[in-house]
Amino acid sequence: MSEEQRPVEDWASDFDIFDPDYVKDPGPVWDELRSKCPIAHTERWGGAWMATRYDDLRELVRMVPELSSRSPVVVPLPPQMREEAIAEMKMYGTENPPITADPPEHKPYKQLILPFFTPTAVEGYRQFTENLAHELIDRIIDKGEGDAAEDYAQQIPPRVIAQMLGIDPGRGAEFTEWTRGVLEIGQTDPEARRKYRTIIRDFFAELITQRRAEPADDMISRLIAAEVEGKPLNDHTISGICFLLLVAGIDTTWSSIGSSLWHFAGHAEDRRRLAAEPELFPTAIEEMLRFYAPVMMARKVTAPVEIGDKALCPGDKMILNFPAGNRDPEVFDRPDEVVLDRERNRHVAFGLGIHRCAGSNLARMEMDVALRVWFERIPEFELSDPDAVTWAGGQVRGPRSVPVRFSVS
Image 1 (spheres, one colour):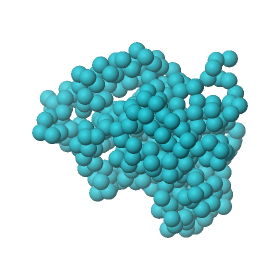
Image 2 (cartoon, rainbow, N blue to C red; image 1 turned 30 degrees about the vertical axis):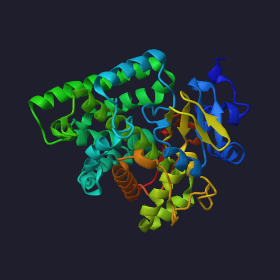
Image 3 (spheres, rainbow, N blue to C red; image 1 turned 90 degrees about the vertical axis):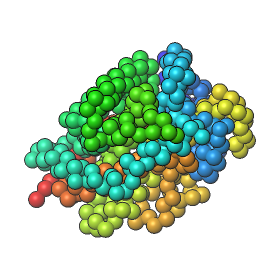
């Protein structure tokens, strides 16, 4: 049994974000840590600290530059890949801006991509998303059963992102494979991470070359035409931004959609209430984002930092457990319950601070369309085999298989 496969005996000093029971239901661990050791530590997976309280998370995101975003992955790169990334950064600048950039470099890149994700901009993709959702349901509705994750949730974000980037949405299955290779399989398999990172980078390099020769009305062409601080972007930086949009914009949102459908399939009272009261969709979506927030981010410690009774040293990694913060009883009433009409919901599913997710409007639109269309077409559904549900964890937590059965009138 490897070091990482050992059972966890003390979550405060030896946590494992890939522990199967934790991935399936991390809530009890978060409750324990918040009350006993809100800043936990582990030597597994390269070693890290992990913050679980809402107020600590708010404090930590303000610690800039002491906590650097240049390495936001929760499992560090192996030495050779880390050296390659450092060499590329020295040659081209930050790898996947703005998520891997610190101030002052961060701000102009964030301002560059924000116009693509304004409420007005993302509404331009609502009809495409609706048509796609109906098409996906058409494929399974006559069967009376399907997989709400594989057949539906996982199919929507890759195709929407492809549409935004000016790529054939029919390549969505490839994007799904690549994203899982980086964010799921690649977390514990460095060679898979390298393989799929290279595939994505090479794909965008070729596409950028094509768009430079033949510009189109799409995001890549606009990035080619854009400037940051009076200078055009080099191909490596454009590729890095596209890499970020593809990887960060797919797994996170399909996990949120999949978790929502898993919840409603297993909680008949909530399902029937939402079906009967569609005016609850706005607050219900925010509650799904709070309760099933999928993403943790990491920071690299660059200077001595104290948080609570813990002393962090340069070189340490700090995991910002936003999902745990979303269930902090000091901030949320009945934090471990799903409350569809929750009025006060200051969740941090999209992060905090300068790195708060730029794509939050897009994610909300996709969730809104995906859930509304599903409930319109399939209001009565349930888990057909609860034991067959599978979850992925680590950087992004979400269901990978949600078999359901349903009846339609």
